[in-house]
Length: 112
Length: 117
Image 1 (tube, helix red, strand yellow):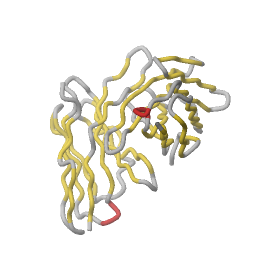
Image 2 (cartoon, rainbow over the protein chains, first blue to last red):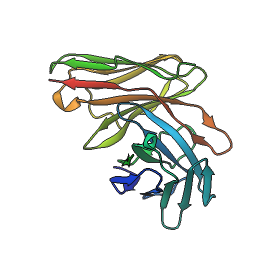
Image 3 (cartoon, rainbow over the protein chains, first blue to last red):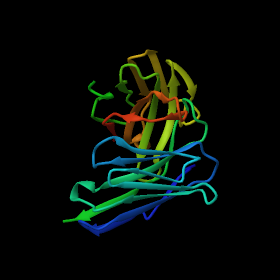
Image 4 (tube, each protein chain N blue to C red):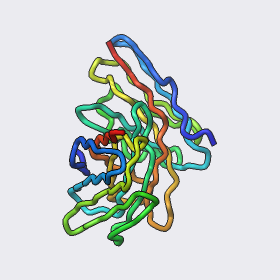
C-alpha cells in the first residue's frame, strides 16, 4: 500500500506563481524526501527533511513537515516552465538501507 | 560518473517470453533498489539489495519475478514467463546511506519501459 499520498493529483498554474503540493503519510517516519520526475525520465532527488525538522529551504524550494499531522508540503516559488514535472514524496520509516515508499505524485504544469 | 545505467530502455515482447532487465549502479553505492511504475499503482518497491545481498523481496509480485546481484556493479531483474499485466516502467536506483540522518537518498536510472503483448 502507498505510504505517502500527494494532493492535489494535478496542478496547473501560470509561470511566476507559487506552487504548493501536499503529502500525507500513515506511519511514523525517520525522514521524508521529495523527488521530481520529468516525463520519460527517472526520479531526481530534490530535498530531504528529517523527522525532527519542521522546515527546510533549498533555492526556490521550501519543505515543511508536521509529524503530529503526518503531513508535509512542498512549495515552489516563482515557478518556471522547466518546473513542469511530477513531484513525489517518499518516506523512510526504517532508516538505514531500507527502501523508500513513494506516493502517486502531483503532476504540476506551469503555463508560460 | 554516468549515473545509474539501465538497459534496455524499451522492450516489447510477447506474452510468455522471458524478459531480462539490467542495471549498473553508481560506483561506491552499496544499496540497489528495483521499482515498478504504473499509472494505476504508482511506484512499487519490488526488491532491494544491500552489499549485494537481497534484503527484502516482499514486493516481488510473483514467482515469475526474480532478481540477482552477482557483484557490486551489476543487477538483473528477470520475468519468466512475462504477462501483459507486467507492462510497466521498471526503475533501478542506487544509494549510499547519509550517515547523519540515516536516510537513503536514491539516484534513479532512466528506466526500462516494458510492453508485453
